[in-house]
Length: 399
Image 1 (cartoon, rainbow, N blue to C red):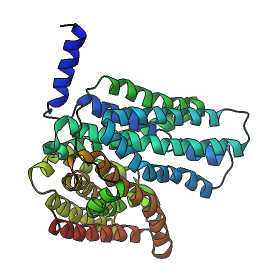
Image 2: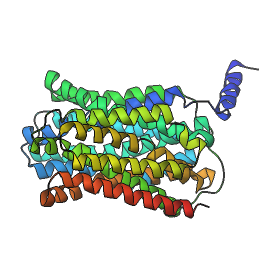
Image 3: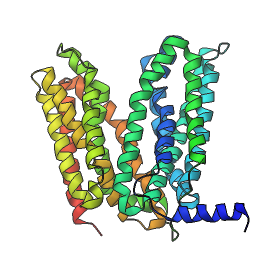
Image 4: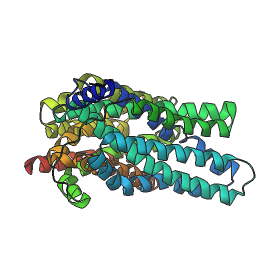
């Protein structure tokens, strides 16, 4: 028997065996690829506002358009994942993300009018949204396929850590490169990150996707909408922290607003590392219920905080509560669809979080304008409690 045939047989065998933990290469690829989301976040607004001279409204619209592209492409990403596997979707997403980075680089070059540069940035943001959708849906489903559905919660915990870490690290790296080496160098980093992710992903085993009937994406959404809505309501709290914490601290004349996301991250990562497998061992609905209650408590602590120490403690508690909602409800969402539709289920499930980030910021802005910044966190607490109530109804309707 030839070496190539034996090697192929070994890879086929490896592809059908579940791992005790998510494949490290998949997690590493997801981290590197998601850097392409974090790196341009602080840079693109400065480019549009300071270099091109457009208003803050235009900045917000251009940044937000990526969410639209991501939401509307989740169905396509899920279909690619279900038919061809998570590896195919992830690699395709890395290629599209690389194209988006190249478009960023073109827009940053001198010689274009501000309007043409802005148009190129808009196209690049749309491409980045499609690339993120394909890449994340593929990697999350691929990671679950590497460990099997019985460890799906643990897999989603680790993929979430990779994405959160990439955002936390990518944004300051992007700003540092921008200030130290210029705009073009920062855009080169946006090209390099997904290319490195693709190089890592190419070496990984394409774990077998289950066969069977595939449902239309609209029907998949109908099956998992309760779990998705619970996840969406959880995302309101985090959105309020990222968008308004610095303004809230400034209005109260508190220092150390930069520690808010640090406190949130400490609680979030601690729970995911220590308790990440809990949704696989007990009811995901029970885990999500108590997690949302804890998140509501953390948001209420920020709302009522008499000093910055209490506000930072509230951010920490919010992180503790948010940590397991995604894997807990994700496990239950996967149970509601046939095995061959897990990619579409994850695409639809994550789309609810995209919607949360897309709409909760403007809604919270209106609330802050009418009632003050503290009311943003009362809103976050109320949404978390509504999410907890929704989880109870989802649990009662469990098939």
